[in-house]
Image 1 (cartoon, rainbow, N blue to C red):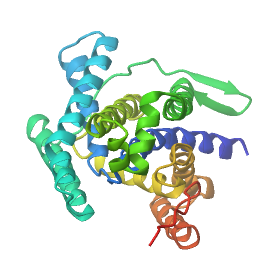
Image 2: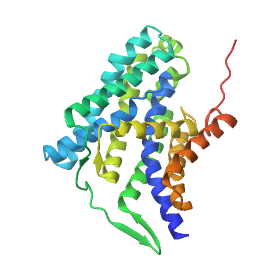
Image 3: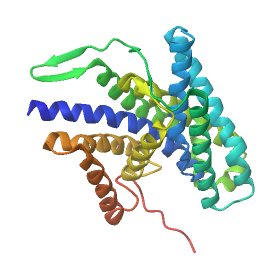
Image 4: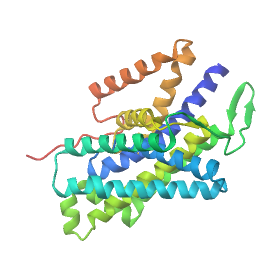
Length: 295
């Protein structure tokens, strides 16, 4: 029983990282209805910035974290202005924006492969890992930090969206951008703020990933982004609590083979099988809502 609990804790830690990434997907989709497939690669960018500032340039850890997140935010905002905003202004079809997001993802992956090489980069712990034992249950300090950061981020983001003036503007743009503009809301600025928040979340997720796996490579954003996207869809894309719950659920499913003592390659079968089942019986996800269209 204790081994099962230990595996579930590992799954929740993994799920916390997926949840942070899924929150970024949810933020962008909730406002402009864009599946930003480049979002996973923003985590990769942040990881390499951490590696550059802390390992190569040997800057203090706190300064390296701040600089890495700032550069990730700048790249995210530039991506929105250069790649996505022109398409939005021209009222381009959704598929065009989706293809553009995939193109941005490939550009970032190959650019960082060119700059840093394709081999994995290893690095020492940012925080010394310790283990807390409660009977036969073991929890690392990194696991606790990751889980707490994920939950606190979800709560703060929910309060921000519901209680602040900017959050209300985001909800208005999400409902109807044309009507929001008529009411005096600067739609472009609101969307830029959304990307700032989304890439800030990517930076936080990168720090959690960095501490857990202790190695990075240029294509880490692909799988991370895919699992986080599944988490967002399962939870109900556009729902902040849904992104968190979906992330935790995906993390637990990923460790199911270890609990059942079977080959770990079965994890993806369980994962995508669950996705298909949920999409069949509840297409909007666990926390998603059906919104009828007027005709």
